Length: 617
Image (cartoon, rainbow, N blue to C red; front, side):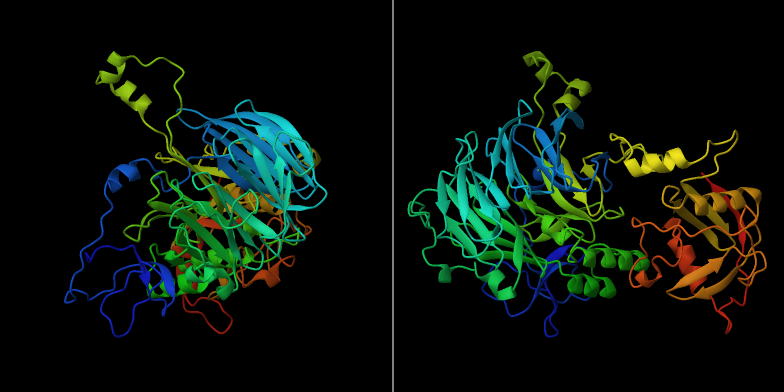
């Protein structure tokens, strides 16, 4: 095991051992397993183990996205909850307002195809058929909608007499199943038929089923209910454990399927590998990634993504990626919100999933640090995408094919050394993902964005909302000359630069006041008059004591509070007390430098730190 390997997945280091133990099964579970951990220092004298190497790993990785930043993002009108790539090369996205969009994969990127107002209430669950021809959505409005993906048409509306909680396609012939939100009953429907269930299954679960998946290879459904029970069953009478699958477990006591019940957690997803040999789950509230063998039901891998484990590694400096302490605190506060009920009284964390690549050797899932690509054979994090982005990714889907070519490729063209033709034949692996509280979905490819500062990678494919239109129409016509508002600013200080993102939509007057003073030179030479470590730094008063200053209008103006902008924890008590009109994007090291200067008993730095000038854009 090489010393410079920095992304080992294994157990916490024991005091009486010199090297970590890799977790490769359920035989030794005396210690808690944790996520990505580096090799501890000082292991030169330890006996070196032969490192596991996945055959053809390099080739597999070439067929996966590798960009650290997302390449493009596209909009919905409300927060997205599901993204799904189908085998027919379509991307389907849904949002909490019941809208559904279809996108077609192109040689590079995607192209918008069609938009449906599928439901009047939030989409609860979605499912694509095994062949990618059909797609189903269910919602709190007690309906299931069925779409013909290739012809991008809604072909059926099934009215339900219960509120559905999950849906899943079974059989290639187009039979769907839906679970009841109030009981453990599962009903099977003909996806192209009427609203009368073909069968009612009430003998498998006693509690509401919220996750289901179907193995086309073994003709078996794996389902999970809200109490933490996992069940295998066939969608034909008597709806029990399959009897015709060789080497399948016979007694649940032989398996590790009670793992969720023991940990008092429930899975948010069950995703089968391409060959159905294994399935991966993510669970809450314990935040564990678990990989099970399908036939034996045994736990083969377990990665701890709990906040406690991530905090320990951050403090010890052993995390796969070291985040700035202030940024880590922001991410930690955001992650805690994933388990808090939202306006719909449901937790946003329920949308988190884990997926496989086409080889079945890599598991991909979103975390606080970014989107991890884990080699389950060697037990290592091989990639971490989006680690420097401010988005907390939730639901992910992967495309690895090569889009069908519209033009004819001749034998001579294929055999030629023309680099243009060779480039056309290359794959465009794409990972699409949703973000917490974001009305956009983000796409990672093998290309980095051309320019992140201009905002061109964030495509505005939706009309402004009614609120945005109201704000725009209420604003007075802009006079000739420079704009009175801006979206970003750079504060040049005597210790360095601080780059800000401004929020003119949420706090138009505060931003206009700041921009006006910045352009007039009002802040030049103004000191930071109050500094409290780990809390705040204050500036902007020309008198230098916090008692002076005036607005560009020569009078006070009202506070501007927005539900879109909140203080990071633990400072949420400041919400609705102080206007938020900007956020530090970069230059946090300058903020920390100012924060840590020596101050007197009035919190004023002994040595003046001044603003030289402010540039606004």
